[in-house]
Image (cartoon, rainbow, N blue to C red; front, side, top):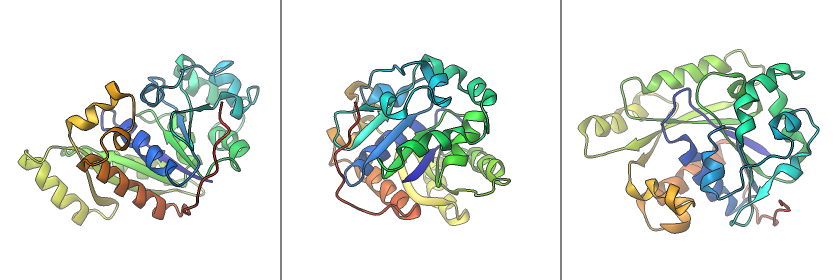
Length: 257
């Protein structure tokens, strides 16, 4: 099982959009679990999953609630969700109080390692104990960057966070919410991948079809498969797959509730 954290220290950069669409693309060839770690529960909402964890996240982290009891199926074969609810607002405090507080998420995931090929962690923004846990659990960190002068600061911050890790994950960034009608956005999309090795040459556009995810409550590829946005998310998944060494396989059907 490979674990991919979609993370940024900055909010509003298209993180949940990337997490949901990566999970959907991955589920076409793998067994996938999307863990919504953000108390806002955007991934949970988009995938139309009930935002309720029995006993709350405290019970889950402490091992009082089994992981497979909390996981929910979605409308998509081989894509399951561990939903966020209001108790995730206290997740930092829960982790601080737990043993090995920087590795609890990795420990919890061990119980489902045989059930999934890929876990996508939709992380809340900012530097926190939750983020530290997610990065320690991850084999790969995927970082959306908006095309602004300060965008690289988020990448620098992530590199600083993982610098002291015993087993630091791979990190790559991609440009998100790019409006090619704007000269500054076009220039950023052209220059950043050339100048910074960790920024890949995949650009997620600013598009109405992506904004529709909230009303469609679905990944882009499921309702607009012929669009540029759907193609870009498929390319992004392929880069994630090869970067994290996920093997293609005909996935078995999940047993999520």
